Each structure stands twice: as C-alpha cells, then as structure tokens.
Length: 243
Image 1: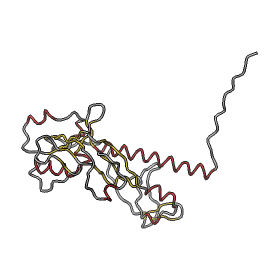
Image 2: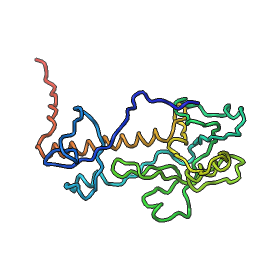
Image 3: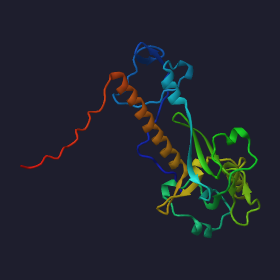
Image 4: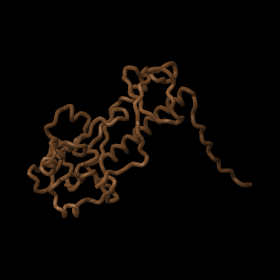
C-alpha cells in the first residue's frame, strides 16, 4: 500500500530570529523576506516573555477527556504473517488514514482507572477510566489512559496504559521489529458516531483547535479592555400601542 500524499504539503525551513525593537529580524542581519500573511511557529524561552498574564495563558496546563471508559479502539499492526482473511475483520475507515504496511487490526477497550498509579500521574485526573490529553498552552504534552482490556484470548488480558497495550500487541504480531513502540496517535483508531474509525490524531487536533479559539477569545478580551471598547448594546424594542 502506498503512502498517502498530501498535495498541500511544501518543504519547510527553520530560521534563527532576533527581536529588534518592534519586529523580528534574521539573526545574521536584515529583515525576513516572507510573504504577507505567512504563518510561522515561534519557539523561545518562557523567561523571555515579558507579560506575566500572557505567559500564564500560553503555559497553563489543562486536561481534556477525549474518550470515556469502555470506548473501543483499533490498533493498526504490520503483521507479516497475517492471513489474507485478516483484512475482512478491519474496521471501516478512510483509506488515507491506514498506516503504511498495516496488515492487521486488533480491537481493545478502555478499562477502569489504575488503582496503584503514581500520585504525579493521578494528579488532576477524574476518578474513572478513559483517555485524556494533557496540554501545556497549545502544545500536546501527554496522552494519559486508564487500564486497557486486551483482545479476547490474548495472553495478557489487561495492559496498564495505551502505550503498554500497543507494545504488547506489537511484540505478539510484529515479530520482525527490533523496537515494539510506535506513534499511538497514528496507529490507534477510535470509533466515531458515524460508524467510521479515525486516528487519535484527529481528536488531538480537535482539542488543540478548541484551545486556540479560547486563547484568541481571551487575548481579544484583553485588547478590548485596553482600548476601552465594548460591544454596542442592543436596544430593546418596545411595543407601541396603535392609535
């Protein structure tokens, strides 16, 4: 199976920049010659952010539940010994989402919360099973899961986390691999309400877009306050009696 080609993808480059006055310049001198409207990502030390309120907003940690306990997940594996009939048990999904080399999908299910987890892992987590995404500012920091029920008849009935479940399945079916770790955002799929399975990366992107909108709303509220601008109040209509 060939890799999916994104027609909108273009090569990218990282540029060293330096703040000079009220603009960014190329570190070795001169303006940065880019088109108007160009979007880039700026990475810098948090200590160099001069506005404490802005710093707090772009570094605050938040936790989002993305799937509840009991949710079914499908793990894509590159099993070189998989029989041809294995494809018949694949879940319904977009062809472009299938990882290159995938020959087998195994179904797992999110179980209850771990009973003996480290305090640092449980901090801020609800008293139930499921899958959560931790964000710091707008960046995805960590994907945290409860225990995971493995496929029926599997040698280990339960895994301690989603990553652990992937490793166990990879060790069982991807025997040609030296390392049995993988990107769960691309290799693990969730069942949506439309009956189609999508990669976990779709949920991650959705959460990040929501956070971006919330941050924009907060920053715009600050601008309104500094400018003394408020929305025009809506005039209430009065019912006038006809003469």
